[in-house]
Image 1 (tube, helix red, strand yellow):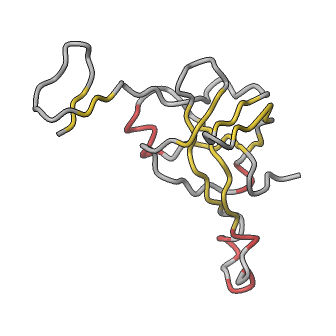
Image 2 (cartoon, rainbow, N blue to C red):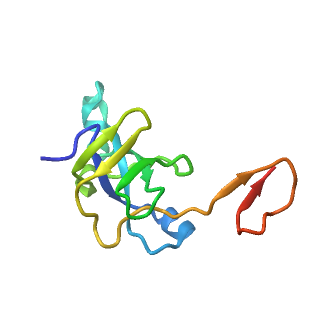
Image 3 (cartoon, rainbow, N blue to C red):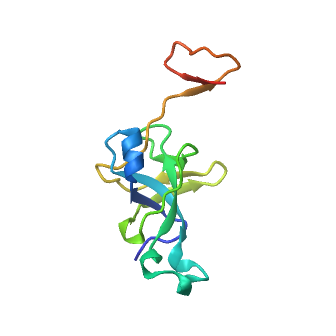
Length: 134
């Protein structure tokens, strides 16, 4: 059975994301939020657009925790349904929008690892390799 809206999925990373992050990942993890095949105007869509989906990327703040949350730094992606693989969920904490995954990810899949960001009112970088935004 193909993944449905609300499922957590692995999806192939777009080439632009792979080029930008250069972290060796081929797959990301995200929440499937829409499928073209479920649209009310599906009969008006070209056949090659029927399997397109909208996925909101998730990220694992603490590596190895299996706890994933919405990735505010990533853009939505639009993979094809046949390229998605459902990931089993152990639990969902709706207070914080955190999904705990129960399944294994593919060896070339996973979360981006971001540097820590600190927002300050001056224009200096801290000495702990953190970025400063003005």
